Length: 137
Image 1: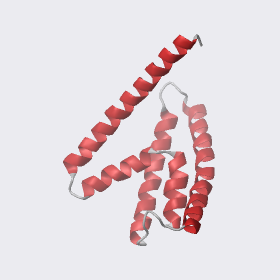
Image 2 (image 1 turned 30 degrees about the vertical axis):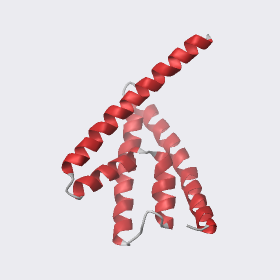
Image 3 (image 1 turned 90 degrees about the vertical axis):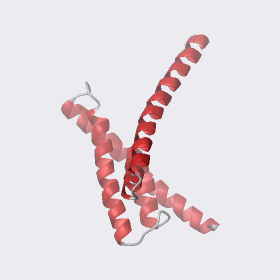
């Protein structure tokens, strides 16, 4: 990829993210105000709606023969959905494995992702608590 293409790609991703991030903020806040925050409904709505949009975008890209480097994909999937939610990429990759006949691999990917991500959140939280306690914060 040449430098002008990299700049164009970066601009498209940035533009998409500049819309996706506030969209997440507003949708998440709207859901939290309407339903409450005793259960993370706002995150669930963001993740499910992001997955729905990822599915629509992937179907559009597939029908039109667009690659992961197309302007559409960089703007919509990488930029907008990448900042709106990351679970949409995870879900699309798991679906791709399943569609390719790799059901066991898809289930393994799902299980590993959930277990490792939850473990990473726990490890990060525990590490930060130790560091902050040692620093007296």
